[in-house]
Length: 196
Image (cartoon, rainbow, N blue to C red; front, side, top):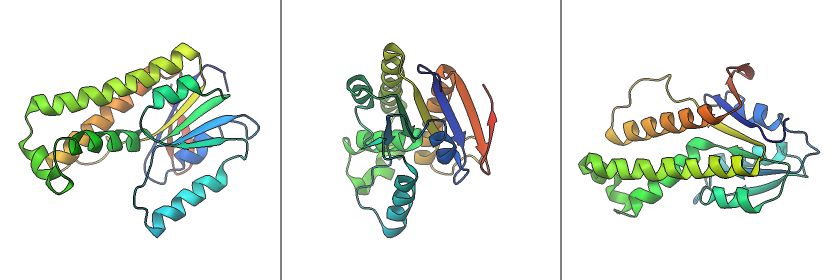
């Protein structure tokens, strides 16, 4: 893989996108695998998913389980490349951090139903700014990176305001990454189609 490329891998749930993304790097390269699905109270099924992902990774890769300060991680870590899996979990975790700074966990739905357009716009801008910093630092360092994300635009319009806000945010972030990417792949049933 080109040392300074940004590659974006999209797909649906269980499409094979993560495994495809992992194969874009050699097992001999020193890769920083950024797992954004930080689970605070994992159940057995989620633990099994995490273990399957971990088993596929090379022993030469280092893992960082985090979704905050990814720009600083890229700026301060020297590796052959970065693999971020995945963008949707990063957005989701940041979104709920920002919402829970304004309300309690039992009132999230109520807060979002009553939130003004300006409040939602502030949350949106903070998340988009976070992604712009990640992409800018990667570009400035000329660092190879693969970002995995779910394609969210193929389903029906969500029924609740909360899920519509999130779906729109996911779509905006995916578009932002795709615009910056040198290569974009869409994975369906384990088959990758190059889009860009």
